[in-house]
Image (cartoon, rainbow, N blue to C red; front, side, top):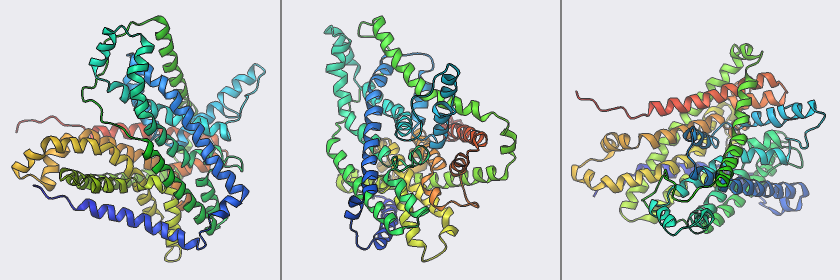
Length: 530
């Protein structure tokens, strides 16, 4: 039997060391470790409560509305459906500030909607800033993603069950109640838990649309304590507090998320097995149109607003091209590091599973998701405290940002590749063993050829996440080292809206463009005879 690859153990040890070193620095800065100080302080108690409050309602709205959207998409086939689903898949990794700029262009005080209402003598009934804007942005990011996940569950229903429903004469509601809802209910704890964690640890969204005393989360309070007040003890205490809350949330969600394996006879329903009606068509179309009305207008507004008189000035600006260069460098290095680390850890965990050492395999893969328990800003804070007494932190800012972004992309890489790599091993392990194929030779001849699509998807997700991240660069960025998200945030903060619009358009084009380029680079080339 082939030996278990050892490189994954070393990578896992490196990840643990990296995170523990940051946490040790936090503990060193907060020697009393008296978390009661946070709960006794009215402001920090409010910050904690608001973090839970906005995450709860963001999850309720995102997942609650995703159920009818996913169901409608599972029932209907229409031109552009595949393109819409690809767009839904991209919203999670779309640069946050780009989408926020689009929302401000529509729902802002001087946005399209406000101007339209003002022209007929009305005023906008709400403000985009504060809780309203945070909820709207979180729904924009998470509803399409939740819809995609729930749609996968619906499409995994075997075609035999659809035929059986028709044979039994079930109507649309009965089929949903007895066949489709059990599938959705099985997936809901996982989807809701993931969305809740993403909203609870949200940074850039709250930083751009909240930030006031009434709309501040724990993660933003950490940033404010260190960056503006330079109160390292409070920053460390808040970081530890957030880490403990995230750990508690993670274990709670794992307790309620018990998914069973899906039937392999999944179906992509192309034939109508239940009698259709015009009411059902209108109902489904309404939800699909509503989802499009949420996702598409902000992106369209980014394009329209970005074509303005400042376009030429921005494209000839040295600051802009410096930010572009730094963004591409950080994204390329971070995504490459995350992909290599993820593959190494999965090769090791896969080898352990083949030897029935499932607990050790789960441990290796859990380490890859450690950043979900200790968010990037917490790790960045710890590294800042660890290195500030040893060296000039800002001289190492570039490599720290790359490392933190790679760590933040690692869970998504592992989630994307774990099942394809495991299924491939189950299918070809014995053949590879009989041929004596292992190591780099096996990866080059089999893994690389069979896994190009998931590998490209994993790399693209890591690339876009790193290119759009604001948490690490916000702490270590400077005038000499800033990425496009930080540059855009500074422009928005100084109310240079036309210039910011051009930068947002550039980020949107780069995100879509690089996603396409990466898929093309990884595309399977046809085999030719020599």
